[in-house]
Image (cartoon, rainbow, N blue to C red; front, side):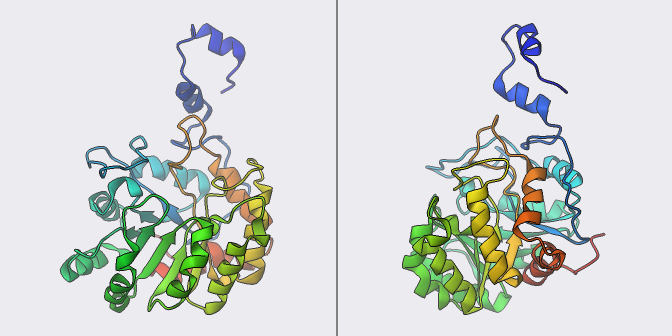
Length: 312
């Protein structure tokens, strides 16, 4: 559908920016209509997405309170991108309330795994029940709160027997401070959004060196997700963040994951990115089809416990 100046004027000025945005996209919380050029391998996994539903109260002080984004909404994105599997991450909005995560896992037909947010008060029985539902890790959000680092090592010791991992989202500068603690964890470690490496420093930033050392330590995975978060160049190419991604691929394609970050909670409702175009960026970051197979299918299948091929 072509949205022209004449179209907006004919609407009598009552057409909001959000309405215009929705008219431009047939996929909720995603701009554009085209499918990606990149054909993803069978069994590919979107390793980072969120669900939102206001029937579950936001945590006190939550700074992100996006519109409701359901699993049915997300399935439209999956259809557009050619994906079937996902990793649902409890967002900072809900603090340590994982009810919506568990609801999504139960509705997924076995095609989802979960990453929860907990604190030291969580019981072993609760952890075991979450494991049965498909949870495979816990997240520490050091950018927006919700968890205390005081519980990092104690919780890591408790989830290690379950085979879970620790997932961390933090400002890039914070990673250097935490590096020794993260390397010493008895679990696998997953770092969100390419470590939030600042721009324009990019690969020259000290925290990028921290990332590479963590990769070399052998227990770390990094998500190629949210390129818009730190990019100063912006869409469609996000070339500055793309240099970080490409260098990570060059170094350790066997330790990388891809995630959409749908429904893009840090972006305004009328400024959502084009998910198909962002998936296509992977062809530039990882030109080798063998590397893309690792990033999209094999690495997440091993980390989250999916079969490498079947999705039905």
